Image (cartoon, rainbow, N blue to C red; front, side):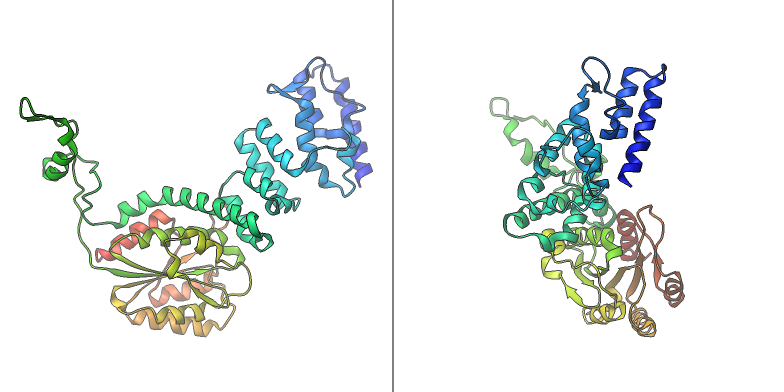
Length: 397
């Protein structure tokens, strides 16, 4: 297979070399695409061979280190520039210097997902150089069982960084949707005398008091948000942690942490596959929550809902939020039975269905319809839409 690919690339290289319309930069790009097989038939352009101001030789070595793994014998790399002296750690350093951030993330994802370079996650030096993002977070959660000692400590720091970034994006919208209460520590976006916070305005401007004239100079005027007050609602998030639900698990864990900070919500977080784990005690620690996730296995939704029933102290002020693809591995009749009990208790039963990577619904439509017919709300929501929905429920809408 490797020899056939090599011959095809050599033939392509010969055709390109003969074409008078190809400029040097185009030749260099084709050489990088074809790789080491084309070395004998297609050399880099005359003078300093560069693409975008970067050395073609450096680019080729970095690309070949990864994509040369396409063949078991690593034939592309050996046929080109010779045995690479790069290590995984130095490769990470090299690609960060050579490529823009978006390209680096693609290369790192290919290294993990396509070529199984798990050494990226079992070498502390290498792990520290990876770009913290949600894709890396997902990979860490899937492979954390391979990590020990300092590597695991580094992974936890990455999880914390990414979780905080996700929370930062979600928190403002969720707070605006849900707060519905007066926050004297937050400034209003609408300046109105009716919203003037006189005490805060005076307190914050005291440093501008002029004792000679007896005047207080108001350098900045503060306004308060006009919001409503609510009694506490209990929100129970039951999250399916089967392998297909990874993105939902991450966002749910972060959202639960945000909900836990809101005084009008009493939040509980439960994750489940065939077993149920109550993570409510760790809501303010997203790292502990996420690192507790055990992905894969079967799914027993009915068992999870039965446990959640025990957390419903005041059903008519409870929102039971099930986040799942609704693919029940246990008894569907048991799932329908416990769902009916929750709805008849006057609790708000919300089923948030899974989305695939293209944001298309990916769930058991038959089960979804049965739950909707009972009176459950069933649908896919973004976190912002969920915040709006909860706000409407609390307003009696």
